Image (cartoon, rainbow, N blue to C red):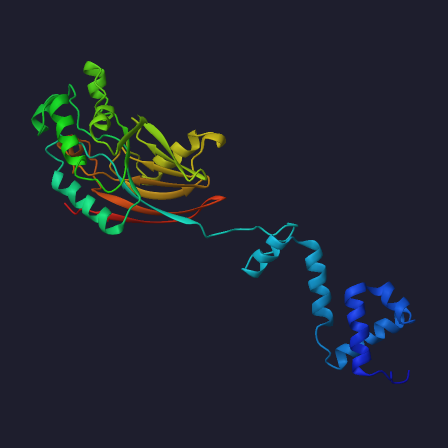
Length: 322
């Protein structure tokens, strides 16, 4: 077979036609057959005429994927074997910074109000958008023998007044709270709803519900506060796992912020970011008698919210060493 005599310019012209119009139209326009076109393709490769194969591949890719999917590929999205579409994942979004506290147990000798004020100072320094409280705002009064000797404020009126005094010191943003089992001792003994009543006296303090409450983050994601009346688990993460298992698919939040057990742990389960926040009451004699440790501290959480929900999360655990 003799050498093909064709200029590079002519060859490039045929290549452009092939890329734009395909095999049949190119053969018809240039009065060549498929075999000749194939020889031209090989010759173009031998002469180093760039772009032929790359452009054809790009044309095919553009036919297969949407513009959004092509952008996902450009940002590192993977074409997974067996999956026709590229997952489009946007890790950007509006950042929401939230200060998380729980189990302040105001009225207990084992809660130091100065520590709550220190938390407020840190929240102010870090510029939180709002604060959440996951229950047991007050210590309450139980019928447990000796409990009365562990109280700094006695009864509903004194504990409510102390809580109002403390939370009134925070004026930068809103505080969203639920009640816990200690708060509800006042309901059981006399029908007094102490956390609701605190909210009536502190303008930026909002009561969301008994034991749980939801906050909408820009209408795109849901943050659920949770308290509960269950107990500690041997494995710190087990309690959060069981809580998330108990929620049906349609009721799952994007973020779960839990209190009650005075433990800090964070997990990602069932596509939910879950944090057990610890507490601001140090270990009590009752806890020590039950061999229950207290993780004393608070959390600052950063959440990026976009149209898909929570695109990412970052948080810091801030412990008080006792």
